[in-house]
Length: 130
Image 1 (cartoon, rainbow, N blue to C red):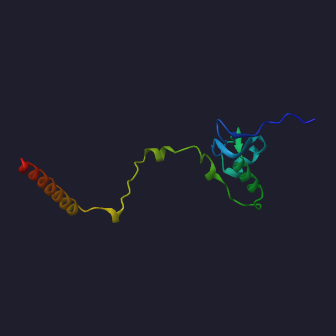
Image 2: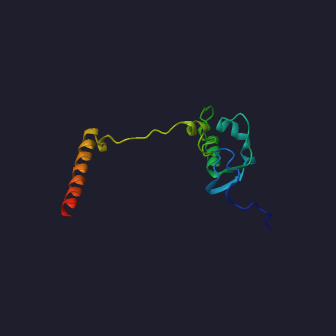
């Protein structure tokens, strides 16, 4: 007989214990099998536990295949999907302007004068009718 197996999960409430992704096109698995490699693979000081996404599992497997003595780590992946950091939320956003589409101030004043002239002509002709 087949034993009970954990159902495949494509969403995780806490998110991946490495990258914090909460949904994945592939399944989440329990991290116990890979926890011994987390510190070396991801450059972590403590070992996280919980669900791990398939993308991070593949990184651990790729790390295991590296040649002996390799210093490569995937520490840039840690908390990458957690959302915006405090640094980015506190920085004001710069507004980009397109230099080719800018209207110069003298062009604006010319347009305003022409608009005023057209409006004043329209009012003067209607008042002369009565």
